[in-house]
Image (tube, rainbow, N blue to C red; front, side, top):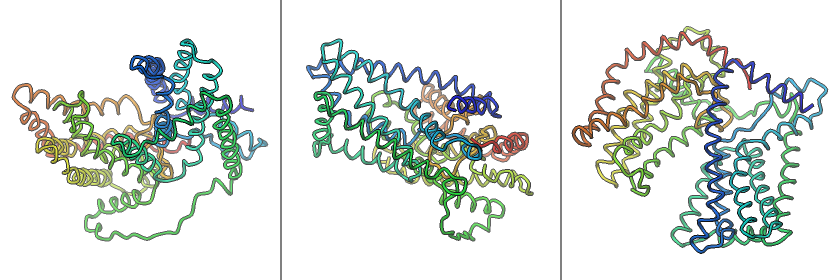
Length: 489
């Protein structure tokens, strides 16, 4: 039966309307996967020899900081790892055991890249330990215990995938623990390191994570099996309806109507709430660049790059999925007498307002100097004048339906990648950096900022012409977009 499921998965991939795009994405993701494999492979070897050169025991050093490795893995899963699922509903009408369907779906997660990548760190590190004279049995048991902990993260991510706001909560916990340890107030590793050392030094401690993994798999299996009904687990969650009129937006006509829909969408759905949360995180992205903590980022050219992100977090995370936010009812919208220009203008104004608000909140960067905040303001001008149009243009070619009930993939979706969107994204980040470099090279930093800002102002002045072009492209892509949104899974 598993062989038939694999066959169905292959057919779903090859028959997809975006098969060409998916194939290109698979190739690109393959190169990215190879890169991370090589990085983890190098870390697996260096994790032994770097502590050795510092007269530290490699296994004790790795065990000391392993808690952060495990927590970082869990946070990344919450943020990026999608739960591999099958189109289960059609299978329920056939004489297929529910346990078989669930086992296969959970088995797909076991082979996830987020799990296998850790082998490129743990396997070479374990091999080096054995070669350097450490007890082979202890190393193998330690390897088994750690991989069990990483798979525990895998199933925790599955069970908790329908919970809101877990990513910022866990990120906050790790940030607080790391901060307390950095300032010497509380060291979490004093309490966790003995556990990881016990897994290595004893022949029984590894059974603890193994048993927890077995129990968690059983709990996950029962959780999904109990809800595997057409009229039970697959039904939508019903909440108490809340009415929000937002009548003050009526004065803006058609644009106000669309803005009301967008505001309600953002407030009521998990995916949009996650996007807003991520845009808030972008506000603090500049701390990597403006605090001089990372030497490679301590230059004006990287600062203008940061200014784009700090002021344009919402524009980037929300704008890249216009019109996918409305994919659930896009077909209905297209049957109505709705002017595309009004629809696009509402999205544009929403992004512009968010950019202005973000720039205002980012005024705390004045602490690092007026020049730093001026860089962020210039980035906002460029975002409003140029990038706001570019993300709308890229949306015409992003035919990826969005599951608003899921917070996963808020950074993007591999199906959203194609050659046109990639080319459109180049001027979003590369052009302002290039303009600044030209201005600062020929004159000084202020001239570079003025050049970037002037292009933003020019883009704003040409807004009507840009919208006319974007509207024509949306109309030409209308039916291809509708066809793509009809596909499920």
